[in-house]
Image (cartoon, rainbow, N blue to C red; front, side, top):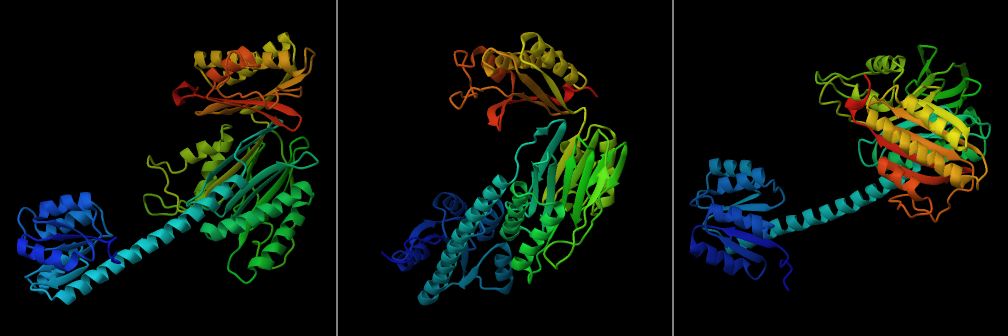
Amino acid sequence: MAAGDDIRVLVVDDSKTVLRLLTFILGKLYRLEAAEDGQEAIEAHASFKPDVIILDMNMPVKSGLEVMQHIRGVAQDHDVQIVVLTAQDTKALKARAFAAGANDFLAKPFDREELLARVGAAARQVTLTRQLRQAYNRISREIDTVAGLQKRLLPDCSPLFGDTLVECLYRPSGRASGDYYDFFTLPDGCIRAVMADVSGHGARAAFLMAVVRTLVRVTQTHYLSLAEMLSLANHHLLSSIGQEPDFVTLAAVDIDPEEGTLTYVNAGHCPPLLWTGGRIMELAPTSSVLGFFDQKYPMRTIEFEKPAGLLLYTDGWYEWHTLEKEIFGLERFTELASGLMRSGRFTLQSLLENLSGEKAGPVFSDDVTGLWVCAGSPLSRVFSGRSTPQASRALAKDVVSAVGDYVEDSDILHDLDILLTEACANITRHAYGGGEGPMEVRLRIRPGQSVDMEVVDWGKGFGDAVKFENAAPESECGRGMFIICKLSDQCELKRRGRENVLRVVKQIRKELWKT
């Protein structure tokens, strides 16, 4: 089989003699199809999907120029190689042909060897394009793999730690990102939150992000202070990228909700915003970026009073262009975020929705990552009780009453009441084997979006045998789980340490919220 058999060539000419001659010369080398006018050429392009088109200019129905305009403009095919073949060998026609999308130009009468050479060159370009596309697809799949692995390194939930809520938002500008956020509890009960931004984009930034994440996570199992954590990270970055232009900005905080203290370090990162006592504080950099030179990382401690919130973010939030072609800027971003915090109903989603003041919303050119840590907010509350019928019923009513401060639809509140009553009753019946024990409902309200609840006990649980999704009335957990499934939009039952956690989410339309 000839080497060109996988190259499809469409020959277009209104002269049957020319078509027979082209078929005779090229037919043994390529897969051929013929068309006698411009409309046939357009239809053959759609069905035959040629790699090369040998195209006459003067034809009935549609001219060669019209065919090219359709292929390049309407069909958006920029890969097919178009060789113009015409008796009108003028500079003006050549200019018009190349402007319309021709790749080569051959005058009639043509020389057989020159025709073969021109079509052969077009075929080689087709082969090269295929190879480049295959290489691109391989790289694209590898980047997708990197992005998938990277996403699994990031926390994908927004839990409650007592009365402290942690909310995250992650929107990479490409498939792999240099942004990194994390949060976890330390042995002393403090919450460590980290936000970092690696210079650049793509796989290189994603790799360095993974290095930083590994070093940060070391400090969870082998406790290091914030200063020690940054020194460790800087040391490893210097050994790996010390001679390269890459660098990392990083802000990290240790929050003690019980003592009302926050200790932080900031290595050249955007200043986190602390909302406490009705005022906003910026946590300015305490040192330079990581990865350039050895340095000290002084820690600073601030006292706060509840309710309080801390926003950590990357520069993608404010480095985008408005409709006036201006950079939105850190000052405007800080002013907007501060105003939402003072309103007492700050969420990362509300910040995103209010960011531009334009219906179209911002078009981000960089990764956008945010972390919101809120202690003692009415939007995140913990309700405690005992696993008795009376106490669990009272617990459910207290939670629904708190939701009622934000949601005005009585049907939604009724559904939540039934859902919580069944969840608490399940704990009473199953968790403590007929005895009595503690239970909690951790409530998180997202105004305009949803109500998230975690119903928690420390009993025996149901084990791995119970599948909560699509629970049937006859399952071990019975009617209660079935009702919870039907009344919630998302539900999950899992073991978290010694806790049995039933997490349910109820989506609520915007018009059903109180203004």
